[in-house]
Length: 311
Image 1 (cartoon, helix red, strand yellow):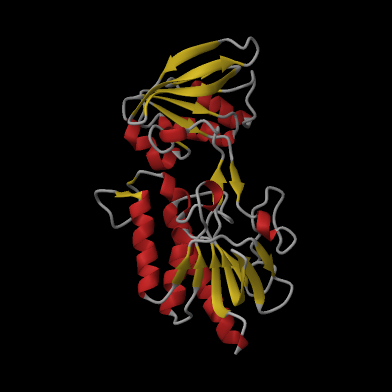
Image 2 (cartoon, helix red, strand yellow):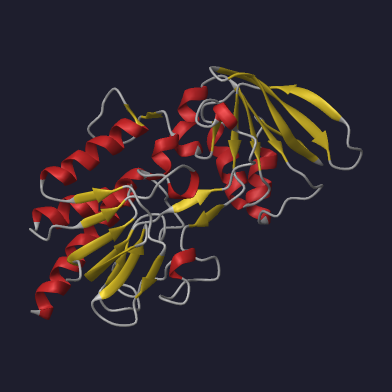
C-alpha cells in the first residue's frame, strides 16, 4: 500500500513548522520533512545557526534560535504533525497525488507545502565563529554591537543597506570590498558614503577570523592585487554577499525566477495546483523569522481550503 498523506511539508524553520501547526490543527496530519545534517539541509533552518533571537514576538528576554525551533516543532507535534529529519531528494508534481522521495522512501501527497528557505552565502571559513561574532543578518544581530566596530563585506545594495542600518548601533562600520567599485545602485552608494560612521577598504577579502570562538577580535585581510595580508581589529563581521534559495530539487517541477526563488501565482499558491510555498524560498525582501512564520500559516490555510474544494 502506498503511503498517502494529506499534506507533505518540505522544509522546516519558522515557515515549515508554523505550516505544520496549522495543518495539524486542521486535522490533516501533515508530514514535515525537516531536512538533515548541517548547512543547506539543516533541520530547523537558518535559525539553528543563530544564538540570540530578540525580535520574535512573545520572548521579551529573547530566545536562542535552536530553542525557538524546538518549541515550534513540539507545538506542531502536539497537534499531530509527524516530523522526520530527512530532506526530499526528488519530487514529481506532474500528476496527483504528488510524489516525494526521501531517504530511499516514497510518500504520496494530496498537497505539498514548500518551506525550504534560502541559505545566506558564507565565506566558508566561519568554523566556530558562525553565529558567534559572524552574522548574515544585520536586522537580527545589529543591536548586539552597540558602540562597537563592525566589518561588513559585500558591494551590492543589500550590503550598503545593512551597513547604513548598522550605524544605528555600531560606533564604526567598515565595508570590505574585493574590488575598487561597488555594484550597488548610485543612491545606495551615496547614502553609505555620506554616512560619517562608514568607511571603506577596497580590494580586500577576508581570509581568516581572529580571536576565540567566544570572542572575535578581528579579521585577516588579503589585498586582491598585491596578495599582502594584514590583521584588522573589529568586534563583529556581517556578510552581505547574497542568498541562495534551496530549490534545486524543484527545478523543472514548478516555476522559479532567474535567481531560483519560487514564483507564487496567487497568495502562496504556485503554478502547480495543489503545491504551495512560504518563507524565504519565496520572500526576497524581508527574510525574517516572523514573516516566514506568517507565510507558513498562510500556506497551510491555502492548502487546507484547496483540499476542501477537491472533495
